[in-house]
Structure formats: structure tokens, C-alpha cells
Image (cartoon, rainbow, N blue to C red; front, side):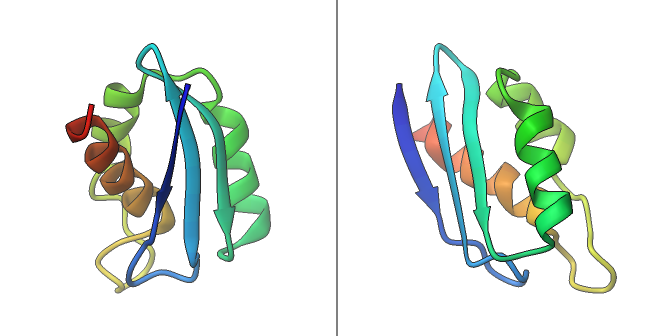
Length: 84
């Protein structure tokens, strides 16, 4: 299992931590952001396919920010997958 930390931009979350093992996401945790929503995202994504999750969450927006915590996670996943 490989651990990753992503520094999001344009959102309330200050950090996103997650792990990838055999192409699956584990231990998705946000520091900051909307606690209920970000905790739910982590629970829903436990064991999910990383590439499919990246594609699903890409472009999700929070108001007029042009991004969201979910979109930022997709960017972090993309960065992690490109480093494999």
C-alpha cells in the first residue's frame, strides 16, 4: 500500500490523505472542509477503483469556486496514479 498526500487549492480542505493498493483507494481523509461531507466521501470510497473514482469526481464543483473537495481529490488521485 502506498500513501499519498495532496495539497488542494481553491477549497476549504487544506490537505487530502489517501492510500492506493492494487488500484483501490483506502483511508481517504480530508483535513478541513465540510466535516460531514468529507467523512462521507472517505467512507463511500473505501476500496473503490482509483481510476474510476478519478473520472467520476473530476469537474464536480462547489458553488462558483470552479472546483470542490471531490474534484481536488480526483486531481490528487491523478497525480498519484501518474507516479506509479
